[in-house]
Length: 124
Image (cartoon, rainbow, N blue to C red):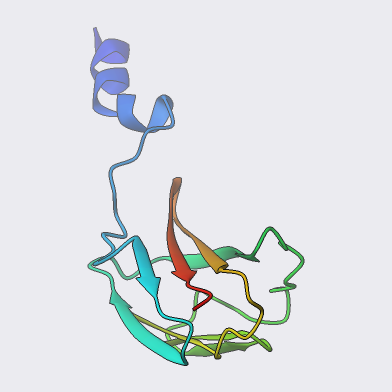
C-alpha cells in the first residue's frame, strides 16, 4: 500500500508530464519587417533558454552564457534576447531586408517542462 501511495503522489513526475511552470504571456507573435522589440513575461522564475533557431539554423552556441541567471544578453546579427530579471524576456529583431519572412524560435525549459516562443517577422 505504501508503494502505491508513493507512486500516485509522484505519477506526474514518473510519466514525464509536468505542468506549465513557465507560463509565458505569449508563445507566438507576428511582427512587421521593421525593427521590432517586444517583452514576453513569465510567471515562473526558474526557466532557462535551451536553444535558439532562426529559419532552421540551430547553430547558436549558448555554452558561454548561463541562461539560468536573471540577467544575460544574447546578441546576434538578426536578433537580441535579453533577460533583465526573473520574469521578463526582451526580444529585439533587426530590420528584415531579406525579402523572406524570418522565424525566430526560442526554446525554454524549467525542470522537465519545455516550452517556446515563436516570432515570425514578415518580409514586407
